[in-house]
Length: 202
Image (cartoon, rainbow, N blue to C red; front, top):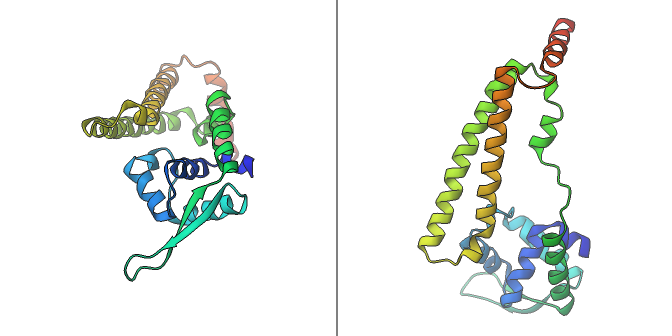
């Protein structure tokens, strides 16, 4: 279960919520959304309830009580167990200290880019640059709003990281596009020939 908790950011987010105080799943989701965590963690109610069930089964959290408001269904309030606290500390420590190989879709597509003619790739990269610029504006807006609400910088770190990642990718994609457009990319002629040969064989 430890590996599951560490490989699933939503699991760790649940443990962090319960480190503060016992909560029911709806409250956990509300707290995460209020803090903008859906920007960095895939959050929906279905997956949240699945995670809560798995964490309970693993003994990392436990049901503490049930509560009811008006005519609403009963809600189970969960708390962090000692094992859950240990897993939270160990899991976060491992993730923060140890780079792990991830498999982004864009990186995978770059490894197969020769399947498309260079002339087709140029506008696709331009489209990506435009979308990255939009995402940068959105992320900067999120950070600006958080700072205006006097949310400490500590709680904006993931957004700051995302901004720097987007900036780095945008710069790299622009350089790649320029190399292709100017003919400076190594292997470009072979790429064009490969594309031409594949086109003739279709």
